[in-house]
Amino acid sequence: MARIGNLDIGSFSLWLSPMEAVTDPPFRSLCKAYGADVLVSEFVSSDALVRMAGKSISKMAFEANERPTAIQIFGHDEQSMREAAEIAARMKPDFIDINWGCPVRKIVSRGAGSGILRDIPKMISITSAVVKAMREVGIPVTVKTRLGWDADSKPIVEVAERLQDIGIAALSIHGRTRAQLYAGQADWTLIGAVKQNPRMQIPIFGNGDVDSAPKALLMKERYGVDGILIGRAAIGNPWIFRQIKYFFAHGSLLPPPDFEERKKVCLEFFQKEIEAKGERVAAQEMKIHYSGFFKGIPHFKPVKAELMRSGTFELAARLLDTYKPEERLQQ
Ligand SMILES: Cc1cc2nc3c(=O)[nH]c(=O)nc-3n(C[C@H](O)[C@H](O)[C@H](O)COP(=O)(O)O)c2cc1C
Image 1 (spheres, protein in one colour):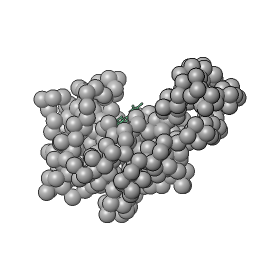
Image 2 (cartoon, protein in one colour):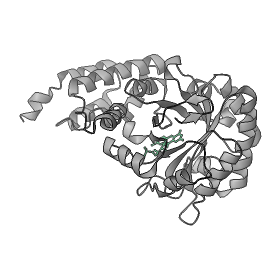
Image 3 (spheres, protein in one colour):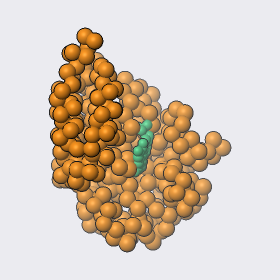
Image 4 (tube, rainbow, N blue to C red):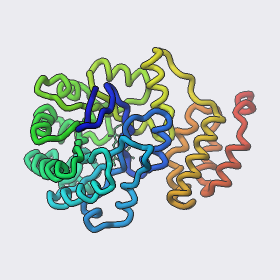
């Protein structure tokens, strides 16, 4: 059994990897319904939290049925990271996750996200300050990071030991360096090396390019991790969690959802997004998900193009209602 502090998350857990502008509460609930075990908020800026910026506060919201769930914070300054963790802790998440992996230039240039990978002592001291502050309120702290800064600097095995020594409760590793951004293939060998290091006691979660049930099984078996974080492959595809669990249990692939299920789930999700953010913002955010929702549906491209332009729930629903996959198949 893997534990994050006192929280039992099972021997192998599937996480919805945190994604800015994607993993909001409606999407997290949807993934939970299809089998995601652990959910993490979008990252929240520690500086903005300390200023009590409204958008950042609302990013931390979660429903009781989402547990276990974490709030992820990012930043570069020890005091504001500690204070942000204290503010986030008032929402009573199951744990606080620190983002030391974001490769976005604006964030990295300030030494936040994966920018900290150029200054490991600072990474250790900020993390330690957050861990100590959270110990007082009984909330475990986890870290999500990358292998290192670039091809010449991949210190993750040593970094993992140091982070464990200062008291983090678990570590998630994306198998790329900052320099790689999202290019090339994720390399899980060092994730495996961290997990196999006899000094490591805390759970280690692997991340990067898991986009199918067979790949999830391969990574689980080959690298021995305690769980997997799934990011891009879950966008518009909450079914991936159910598919992986089915494959683990039965060794065969669950058929993909049919068009009717996809349509139903997509429109219900759109409705929840509207309730959360209003129709204009919801319609904008749905654009991220349409490709995933209808992947593999025959001759869907023109419908998708219209969906992208649709802008309202009513129009999107009408477009989907008039699409008949059987007729398209005969074309
Ligand atoms: C649109 C987008 C937003 C992301 N936002 C975050 C974030 O807020 N926090 C974080 O730790 N990682 C973030 N990531 C990284 C993902 O969590 C994940 O580590 C990465 O996409 C690799 O996993 P994957 O191959 O399963 O997508 C983001 C990735 C994408 C594509």
